[in-house]
Image 1 (spheres, rainbow, N blue to C red):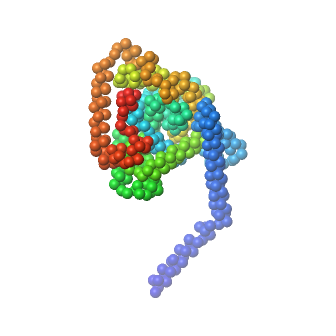
Image 2: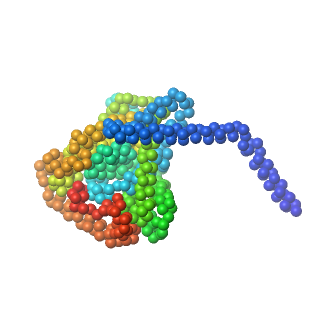
Image 3: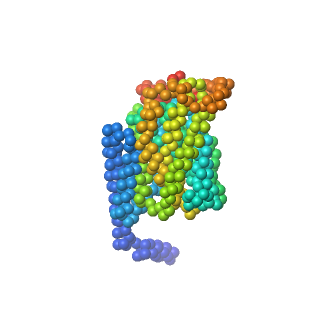
Length: 531
């Protein structure tokens, strides 16, 4: 009995302690909670109204064919206006501040996945060699060129940075070399522009893979700058293997279950698998961007045929709509940062020089690498012409990924680098994006213009520079490519599609959807590029 009484007493005491005035809700706490709830409601309402305005403005831009003002530019300008009003009327600007965590874990994944899921696989993999050269070699060249020129400018006293630590400038070179797929998709992927398929494949493919390389370089230089920083995985191979393995696992689950009988479940599960792929890759220190992109490609090639007819249409439209909304939010936040972030040290000279360095670095990687790629392509119709190289040079749009990385810069000059990065991102997106339609038209890079057929008239290659043809190297490249293509086609049709799903299943009406023939590379598709 005494024991029970003791227990009761202890429980009563614990209850009294729990309900003491120190821990119980007070009038002040309730008021604070209500204020927080009201603030969140106001923020949600403001975001909805802003998105509605951006959507309606984008509608009028498209309807009236104002190609000089892309959708991303509209969102940035609206963001600048809202940021200016907030600066004058609001004291707490937390709501209007750009959050790298929000960007990388909420806004970016839908954009990257939708890009991979809706990708023209045949065109992309036919040009994977050139895309890889641009993404890996070009990014490394760009990072070092910008870094060296920035450090040299500091040594000459043109800009105020750390003259004694070149790693600071190389960090800036790495982050500003990230060609943003969000900006590229928003502008180059616009249906109204009808961008040439080969050009779009090169620009978009480079921008997606380039981000992973830029982030790896950024972390590498950061490790030299701060040796006590966290360790991370540098290998690219695990990223690709992880992406394909998870995509195949999801496809296998869908193929060998009856999820197609429940369209709501299969669509929701696909959405969760996408985020799980990105989060898992980031958790094990791989590139979430690259993992999610290739995961989208695998799911598009195999799993789309495992979905019901209803889910095929609904998931495609859902991911496209979600990507469009998140793109708009990203550009809105970038625009608001102009006024809502307090840049203590803004160097206008550095901003102009940084933009110039980006253009120089872009030229030093696009034109030489295009020459190398042309050496491995068939002579004549399928080379990367000089006009296309000029558009590739112009298409190096910087965006939110570069700015998000600049938020993580160490050192006393981080604020200066962030301001310069924001200037370059907005300039390339708004100004260069506005000129994209004129540039594409001027160089004949609109769809339907036979620029590839006339490549021999103005293409720039190693042969033109050295006046030496390389028939043996080209024939070897073509032979290896043909053997590889035939091997993969047989493996895919006879084994992979039987196990994970695909066009070989011939699921009635499913065989006529947008995915049919994505892998079956016709001779016409193959003529656009072998490397």
